[in-house]
Length: 341
Image (cartoon, rainbow, N blue to C red; front, side, top):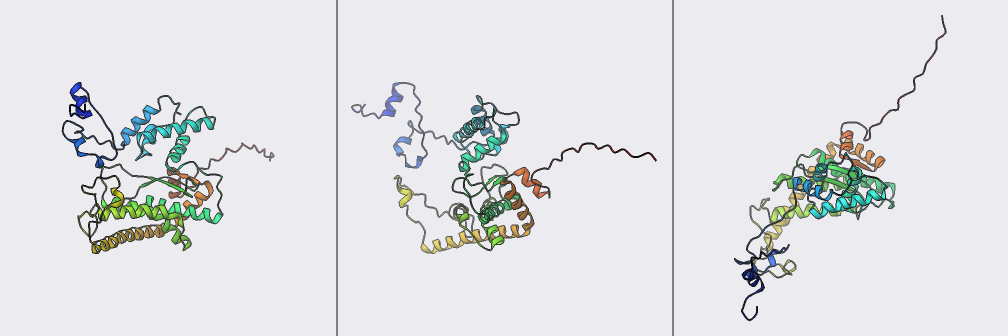
């Protein structure tokens, strides 16, 4: 090959009817010579599956598994937005392992719920103990997220709230988009930021104190706000992109040495806009939680009693009912004989 001056790809195509496929998650660092016509000149972007595709993927991985009659793959698909095919396979494999551990004959819906939680956050740390005060604070924090999800139309929907520790988190709040879309509006992003800040706001309102539990929430909220300003043009700075894409610098280490392509004055304005967006969302969350303080207290009481609340149980609390329906046992008939008059 070297004597004829041909590279490997050209030689393979010239020798036979061969289609060469390659995959990468860093197309930005490929040599342009690889992408010229006649070589890897067709790009196919494989994104994360939508709800229909997730249902079909689950059906493939569920073929050799015994599922209970109440298990609906479409419902599992709705609860797993953002999951890849490998994640969905992992969910069902984890569910199968849990089924064996629980000595069950079939995979049930509660087992699948636990498997989803394990894939997202890791196994529950039921042996981890914390004080009643800390437990109460975690319940308030997680309920703050839930209140925003329940009362703000643009926020994500609440699917489950728990105060059982998982991974590095003291509690866990599963929230999914109301509808899967290809694009997001400014109000959608503000709703996400408001949802992230709900936990910290609830702590501040109830305890007049804040904890380190909102670390990851603040990180996620700030990332979205900065993207709104620097990448999406969703601020008073207008439709200008300040995020440095790297230009022609295609070295692997470019992400660590990218140059700032705007002035110090613009950097100051960017920081001001990010703060303004965060402050706007924070005040929205504060007002929502103040207006629904009674509901927050009732959900917190339910969490402290049951440790985990599903969307259906939370809805019962919203309606003024107990989280778990109380079934009264039928009373035995008592026959009383009256004396003859």
